[in-house]
Amino acid sequence: MAVHTLNRPIALTGDKAVDAPLARRKAKGRRLGPGRPIPFGHAIGPIILFATWIITSATGVLDPETLPSPLTVFHTGADLWRDGTLQSNLLTSIQRAGISLVLGIAIGLVLALVAGLSRIGEALVDGPIQIKRAIPTLALIPLFIVWFGIGESMKIIVITTSVLIPVYINTHAQLRGVDGRHVELAETVGLSRWQFIRKIALPGSLPGFFTGVRMAVTISWLALVVVEQVNATSGIGYLMTQARTYGQIDVIVVGLVIYALFGLFGDLVVRAVERRALVWRQTLAD
Image (cartoon, rainbow, N blue to C red):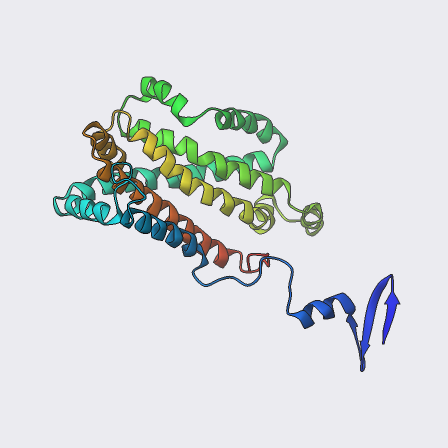
């Protein structure tokens, strides 16, 4: 038996009323949204891509002069590791990217709080950030070389300014989207400015902040590729530049694989931290 309440059919089962469309979906075993998370689902795409590379190389579809086979790249990487070339350049790249990433995230978060919690702060900060956002990193390098020279400080500044943009944009947008009722409640209970930031603003901005950090991790490696190919004497980018000069495609691919792996694993780490920090939030990804 079914009755209609507010134009929605309700099925009566015994002593319980059940929403009819919901009951039909459950009976069919269907649900809206992407479904349950797949274990190690993020690794499926890269595995398929890697398998395609192996198959096309083994069957001759992929010309080794265009892209060496995975086995050739592995042997080249092993040779570079044995003679110590890979470790020294890799350590330099990790150090540059790590320092710049920490600085960029910290500066981006502070600027987002200043602009997101104050109209005056937004007027002072948001415009310059949007200008930097519109200028490619590569276009700023000649000016930064004039200002800061060609040493490590220039490279770190270039990467840092690239990293802080996505952190600022996403955190600022999330701060502006904090429910106004929460602000009214904070005013009602008499929270101080610092208590409001700590208990409402920061927790409310976390989803946007983590989105920005995920983008920042990728951008840090993209910017690193650029700066390490400009007046650098060490790093994975420098190694790739030297390989390009001598036509060593396999060494170039080794560098690309390293960049890709660090970008992928960096994103996975941020996702894991995000899940733990936002355990209270239920989304389609859960």
